[in-house]
Amino acid sequence: MNVKYLYKHWKYRLFAPHHQGFGVHSPSLFKFLNDIVFDTSLHVEYQKLERNYPARIRNVKRKYGRLLCRIIKNSAPPNVLEITSVPNIM
Image 1: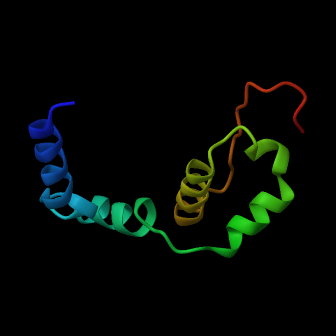
Image 2: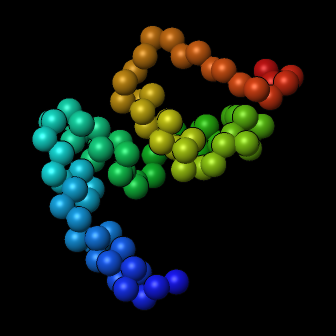
């Protein structure tokens, strides 16, 4: 791998102006990025989800399951439709 390319890549990753949502002009998108996507705090819902639905989340990476949990918690939809390709999951 080219050393110059690696240097430029990490320089961009560390000093990009839009890192962690900064540089985003829409207030609602900025709030979504900071409060939901980049949230690293532990929530009680994670343990409940992993304890009650171990078979369902076995096929989903932990970070994506937690992101989906935060999105659902923030939007508070009246109904959630789950579509899966795994047979015999109830």
